[in-house]
Length: 293
Image 1 (cartoon, one colour):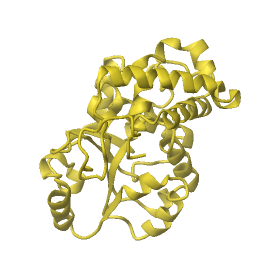
Image 2 (cartoon, helix red, strand yellow):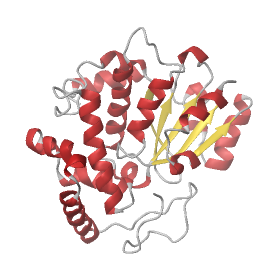
Image 3 (cartoon, rainbow, N blue to C red):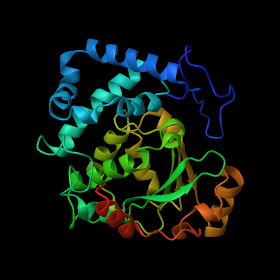
């Protein structure tokens, strides 16, 4: 959902470069919408809130207002959609992590203690840079960093959960305005395409994780991209599908397009896309583990 409800003021009446409108937040708005959110969840059918009730019993400290606010922001303060996303999140979290880990803290030594291999492979990597005009964080997605001999589908999917939460935590801009995905298909092989994996990942993104994707730049798509995209579209909502931009051609042409049309200069792009950012993903993971994150 890109348009806030009528009772939510806007930062601007004009959509931004990604076609999004952003709520003008205030303490009063947040307080009111959180109250509406709580009431809506209470009235939802029991079969839809079973996961939420388990979380309330087993990890109530994780269910604070800051956590719930991420879901409201993901749905630009549409309370009904945010509440449904919140309930779907807990349903999926229990399904993906199992009852023994689903309620643990979302840290490398907690809920992700069995996923270090998949996380270190770097299927998804926060770049530590931001879209110059909006401050949205950039995330690199490299499908070639999949190796089914080293991880299960479930573990790779959980690695996606870790990356999303690491980017969203304590980052108001990421929560309010979304993130920019930069996908490189340069070295991916057809054998690495896994329909079941794609379905699992997309189910976590669409209507589940409190992630607002502003735009996904698919750079240097492989020859079989049309087949992959046809499958992906089955699991993505209309809003996310409309956010995908495909960039083909030489390195020079792709970089020029990203800068001229989207304001993504070389100094915010990774070397994988002829940018200036050298990503030390494993070093980033180690620092987070040492910090207890």
